[in-house]
Amino acid sequence: MDITKNIEILKIKGEDITKKKDILIREYPFTIFVNEKEIVTLLCTPKSLKNLAIGFLFSEGFIEDTSNILNIRLDEEKGLIYVDINNSNILQEKLRGKRTITSGCGKGTIFYNVIDSFKSRKIKTPLDIKINEIKELMKEFNHKSELFLQTGGVHSVALCNKNNILFFEEDIGRHNALDKIIGHSILENINLKDKIILTSGRISSEILIKVAKSNISTIISRSAPTSLAVEIANELNMTLMGFARGERMNVYSNFNIFN
Amino acid sequence: MDITKNIEILKIKGEDITKKKDILIREYPFTIFVNEKEIVTLLCTPKSLKNLAIGFLFSEGFIEDTSNILNIRLDEEKGLIYVDINNSNILQEKLRGKRTITSGCGKGTIFYNVIDSFKSRKIKTPLDIKINEIKELMKEFNHKSELFLQTGGVHSVALCNKNNILFFEEDIGRHNALDKIIGHSILENINLKDKIILTSGRISSEILIKVAKSNISTIISRSAPTSLAVEIANELNMTLMGFARGERMNVYSNFNIFN
Image 1 (cartoon, rainbow over the protein chains, first blue to last red):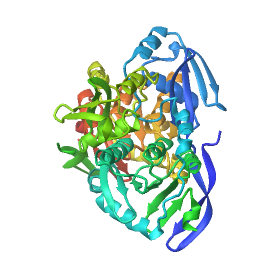
Image 2 (cartoon, one colour):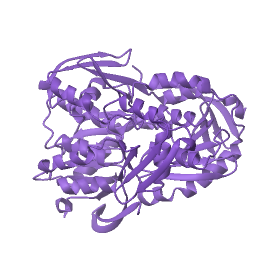
Image 3 (cartoon, each protein chain N blue to C red):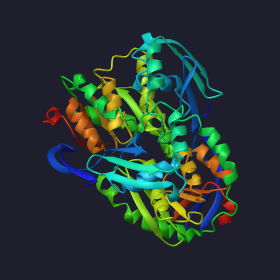
Image 4 (cartoon, rainbow over the protein chains, first blue to last red):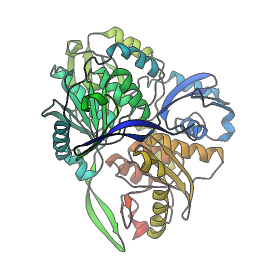
């Protein structure tokens, strides 16, 4: 299976706006079953999938070595792998475990139902924002990312309107930084419909879905989006932009705003 | 609470090796309780913690807005927050959910017990590796990271001995890339005790613990480690290096190997 996907983007460089082919990294939902029980759905790059499943099961304590593995059957087309193991006691113990809630890091088979349930949230009118406004916001955003400059270790997320950054949060986790912004908005009863998210981190499908849940129509990153994030953005009519750095930025959905 | 931590590192720049003060980003375990039930432990930056808890509970569907929140009590010293909500039906539903297993992205209250259970795994003799060997390995590692260069979207992890890269894996997730390497090693019955992990991504405590579980003594990153990762590396006598780029690298534990 291809691990990248070719799509058409709008490439902005100074005053120049052109449609170009671009390569995105594919984000692939991959569900692991152990002795026919569904264990987890990882969001991953579709390559070395048996290695991923076995490494995951080792890291999570399901197996200790190859002697525990009875059979492996991979269905790459459907994104499923069935692993049979001989230590079924461990499986029982894991399934009784109390760590019941995802923090949204690539697991959760409810994932696709979630997308379905969002279709009603399709954005009616994309936010009308100008390229120069984005450049100014990203300039301010970069100035604020001081903790990253000191330590090289954190992600930044900001909530903005077209003219200003309203809140700015940092965290070692991309999800945590975004959750801090969302929590801040909830605690202050901010209406998010006309707001914009800026982020330093990659836009995976889970980040996009978190933004969609908050009714925010526009997300702009300094880094790359995944293929699945772009697909969902198109589905929900959200505006997704990436590699926003200085005079350059890529538009992955809602091209018409800038044309 | 400080969001960074000052430690002493060994800074390598060409032939020059000196002890220097360095600033690390703090990694802080933060446990959220809803109506007295323990929900999740996030590994985060200790700042804006109420925002984080409320944003997490919104993203995970526990609350819809402030009207659902009855009370918030933060114990920053102990890393605990107690949120009381008025929609207890949702809490019941969430606790019955079937997504029972972490993929190791900053949750799991078993976390600290895990560290305790590792103390028996303390590395007896750190791997004796030379700076020039590391430079050569990192050079090869960077050459291999082609998918990143194309898409800007993936992390790379490699398993090496002192002289060569044995396996190389890429994924949109840092954890997935490492699990692919571990799974590959298990499927080929590779003895990991004298091996080294190279990674493009940040070294958080969870990445370090995954490496420790595999009995690998040495991990080297192109990026930064967190404070908690360095603490655990010291605890387990593992060798942790970061910012390995060209002629430069930082040593965060086991200084004596290079002195």
